[in-house]
Structures are given as structure tokens and as C-alpha cells.
Image (cartoon, rainbow, N blue to C red; front, side, top):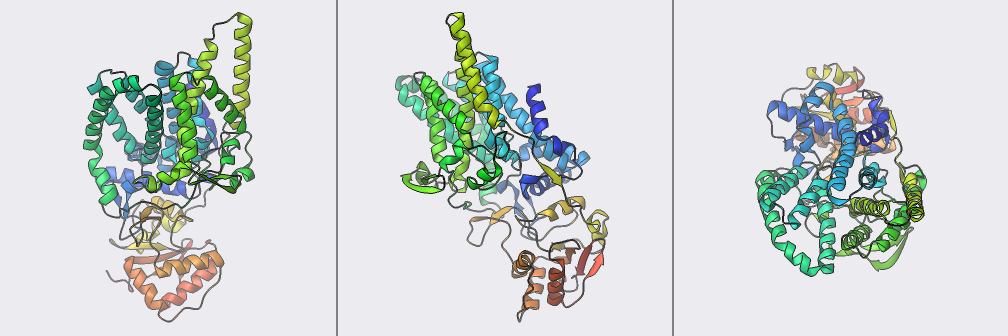
Length: 565
């Protein structure tokens, strides 16, 4: 377990060495978003505010935090860390501890309950925590890194099917599920789907044995569901029916290319960034990428252990989850086929309609880890003359080395974060923002540029921001990333993207003032080093009819006269 922690630290070493200004290069804007989540959660704990909602973004409508990946299960207990050391330390701690904790949890469950060899348990646990898809998400998505509760959910289900202390283990199952809801609902859904496929396969293979398991398992699950419901009923109601909730999150067709499974991820020893780019959405969504040697090895293990019912069910679950992740139709190396996938039956179901189908490949990861642990156990416990035993061990560990070394994780890249303008760090903003007023940062923060969230943190979360980076309802009630754009926001975004200043249409000034009043804005702020700063400054001056002032690293327009509160 200490070894797992060392490996996790080495992966994040560049971030730990530069907590003051380090930024994970492949995280896009997610590091800004997650640090904001941790900071707002800590603030809610200290002020006894509702941790399920905040109006510090998307002012005045606010953000339904329960409908976002806020991870209250770690943000709340780590409040002292956030308050004393800042949200970047919490971010690094959650990521590093998430990897190490997931590996340790799987090692505990595997070594004590599933396999009889600690070497096999260590190999399986390491793969469960450090597989390429996990490391891909380790750039930006701690909810897909901190998976240490899932092994214990599996353990409680195993205890239930064995009929062990059904009520007690049912209660523990409910507590674990409730806690996982506050860590990440999407991993829980993927895990539940994986276990369902495993259970169906096992039941079809051993129907009489499965029937005997129904009563204790059903009783335990019923008890667990009751316990979990008591704990999560209100937060889930808030998520799906509370302020700024939404009905599903459309992603489009995002299935894995079949070629991704035999390719190598960016953050791996044999990784080819350009090849991986062609087979994935982005650096944080390389959800397959097992590498062809491991695919061959796992196929061989599945065949060799096919007569073992549990291994057979695991193998079926592994391949079915991989198939689900390929989407509605099979695509091979960019070329579509006429072969449909099971995602056709799932994509429109509640909950599933908000999940990227490519992520279901991550359900294959722990299953593959367990299969590797089981195969290692059988090799180490192989009863044969010494020369055959030694030959079997040499062959197996050579195959493991050949399959696992190429996909071993590499150090995650970090670059220098742009400094926060002095306007925010020095507290100058207090001269321009009154209680109930907001700050409009130009261009307004969104999924492509959320630096303003960090500036807000550095200002002590003392003011709300117009728009931001979050998931909320669009005009049709479906989920969307970022705020519903106002005309002024869209105009400024276009200028930031193109550098072209359009002619201000008739009524443009009136519309800009209406937007500022909608946001209840007190001040408009344009960083002096922003891209296309001259074009943006000129446009704002034309819209507002006054020149900006350069104050502490930003151009600003005091608009309180235009937006009387």
C-alpha cells in the first residue's frame, strides 16, 4: 500500500512540486472548476450555507451543485485542508489519494476475499487504480480517480450472496452506496451495470445456485436501499428537481473506436499522443486504450479460465462493457460498420442519457484486474514438477511484463498558471462591487476559459460572477455546459475568438445595458493581458459609451449607474 502511494505521488510529482502556480496541462479548464468546487464547499461548511447550491457562478440564477460533480464526500471532510492550505492542495490531495486509495482498497478486498496470493492481489489492484483510462481521467476528473468505495460495495454484495449477516451487511452496503453518491454517481452507475452483467451471466451458468442466493441478496439490497434512501433522498431530489436542475445531459454519439482498445494512451510508456488523439475525444477521455498486448493476454486468460464460472462471468462482463462503450454502431479505425451495439437499448434510459457511452469501457478495468489476479493465483499455486512450475511462472510473468509495462503510467505534465490580476488579489475589487452586485469578466467565463473562477477564489469568494463553468439547464430544460448565453456575452466571445470588431447594431447599447442589469453587474473587468484585448476594449467602450480605466492590471468599467440595484 505504501508502494501504491509512492507511485501515485510520482505521477503527480510536478504538481506537488509547484502547488503555488502549477496547472495540470491536460486538464483543460477542469482544474479551475474543481478548485472552485472545493473552495465553495469549504465556504459552505464554514458559513453553514446550503452545500447543494451556490450563486457565486451564473449569477443571479446560481448553480445546482448536486447536479454537478462537486464531490461533497471529500470536499466536506477536507474543508480544513482547503481553508488552511488552499483548494489547489485539496485538488492534489484528492487526486493523489484517490489513486493510492483505490489501489489499496482493491488490494485489501482481493487479498483477503477473492484470491489467495498477495502478489496476484497486488497486480490486480495496481491495474484497477493505474489503468490507462484511469490515468487519463487523473488529469482532470477526481470523481473517476477516487474509486476506493466501489471495491467495498463489491465485497458487501459478495457477503450477501453468501448469506453472511444479511441485515448488518445490508446496512453497510447502504452506507457505502450513499457515500459513493457523494463521491460520484456516474462511476456508481457504470459499476452497477458491470455487476448486473456479471450477475446475469453467473445466474445463467449456475441457475440453481443463483436461486439460492436470491433471498439473502434481495433482503440485503432492500435493507441497503432503505438506508441509502434515508441519507440521499433530499440531495437527489435537489439534484433532479431543485433550483437549476435539468433533465438529462446530451453528449451526442461518443462511442469508442474499436481500435482504441488495442492502442496505447497518451499518458503511458508506449503512448503516442497523436495516435491517441485520433481515437478519443480529448486527453481526459481516453477511456479504452488497453494496448494490444494486454488485449491478447486478457483474451487468453478468459479462454484458459472459461470453465471457472466466476471467471467466465467476469470475462463476459469485461467484453460486454467494452462493447457497450463502442456506442450505437461499431466503428473500426474511423470507419463505420453495420454492426449495432447494445448502447442502442440504453442511451435513452433515465440516468444513462447523461453518460458518455465511451466511459463504460472503464467498467472493464476492475474486471480485468480481478482476472489478472485470479490467473496469477493459479500460476503461483500450480501443482506440477518443479521444472514445469518454474516454466509456467516464467512464461506468465514474462507475458504480464510484456502486457503491462507498455501501459504503465507516466508523470502528468504541468505548466505555469497565469497569475491572477492584482485587481483581485489586492482587494481593489471591493471599491467597485457592492452587496448584491456581480462582476462581469470579459470574455465571460465558460467551458473554454474558466480562469475567472480562480480569480474569484483568490479574492476570497467575495463576489458572484456572471456566467461560468458548470452544468445547468438550457432553454429547453435539458442540461448544457455553461450558462445560457446573453447577447452581450456571445458578442464578446466572438470577438475574443476572431479578433474582429463588428459594427454595433442599432439597439446594441440598450441590449448591453439590459444584459448588465440581468446580471446585476457592478463592474465590467477586462484583464490587460487578455487575448484580443484592444478589440474587446474598443467594443465595450462603444457599447457603454465610456472609456475604460486601467487599474491594477485590468481595464474596468464601473456600471453601477447603469444597473441601479
